[in-house]
Length: 568
Image (cartoon, rainbow, N blue to C red; front, side):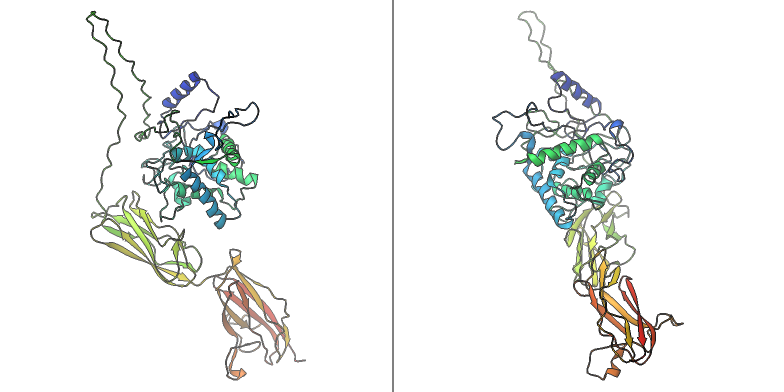
């Protein structure tokens, strides 16, 4: 993710001449001014082996970033003058929509992952060094940048070498990847970590709400607690493997914790824009991989007026240089059909995530893949199943290979059949596929005994107390899980785990005589807290050793040994 291009100078660190030299260096590096591409951090700046975060792949492709730091406060440390507005210094301002996105991401993660405790100020620090808060809050009403914020081409020339992974769907480059959006995700990491932060059913790296929630989710990976310094450093270094990056983010994080306030969207200069322009630097045309950007053209000097009577004409003023324009995109043939890419019915136990995501391929009339086709996925059925984020309808744009994958499905609490309808949009004749799915019974992966009653009883009597067990799944209580209870003979017979024909038994409910209600096989269900309480266990006149086997859906098993002694 990281990456804006062109390392920015720290406040108060340069004279006008040095600043001019820095700008010349930026131009020579091929960095477009509005998107602002920075040179990568030096090799010496990379953490040594074993540094925190080294075990995680960099989410940004180790793209460059802005190294501007907040002003230091205190005696002799660039203190603001007395007339500084009470609303805070300009560098402490965060555009309103961007600030709202950071805070909503914090609230969402506090609910879904309370252990992590990600602070919005950390997201703000990363958003500052990655994109200057989405170019100073230049966003539409939905929180999306009007034009993509792109990092440099990751072609191995001064940066990481990452071949294209998205068919150009996110970054417009079909040869190499580029970091995208306000929080600068490379496409392959967005595919794994992208989130829907504004509830519109889409995961868009160019949307500040989606990007902020995705960044927070990534920082919380590996069960991190960001109040622990090591976890905090690992998370930041996982974003960009640079000790200078770590120091820069931590400085802004500390600054925002002490001094941050809301400013109107678009009221700050965009990163790299000259002071006083209000950040209205125009976006440049995309630069082809390997093609350096042209150096800025110096404005021509006005022609010197001719002296009266000397007969020599004035020298014409050179015309202003016209910036390159982006050629209009080539329109491809529209999609006309959808092909199911699944291997069969989608299935997951109640309350769990489906292992497979609904996927289709949009094809043109010639059966070739159709890129940028819109496919709407809708979950239908009575199981309570939704897509990740709680939506039941999402719209996905196909990549260059024509493939559209819906977000992960979360199985509802009611087992049963469901259908995911995939509809190709923008066609005169409706094109819809029905993808079959099923929510199976909830499962448990662990079963433990919770009572302390004895498991020895005399013949013709009743065991003292009732056997109690608890079922869990991934460490959490597993309610509604079916369990099979079987009384088995002492040793495994040729018939396998077949119920014993005599020995301990249960009584089923009913008005019939007790002799007719004896059973050595039961099916029970765990309660709302995952608990399972067995009925009373009786014995006939058969003595010896028996086994009681309890197995849940999901394969959790407990086997208890029962001893029946001579009647007292």
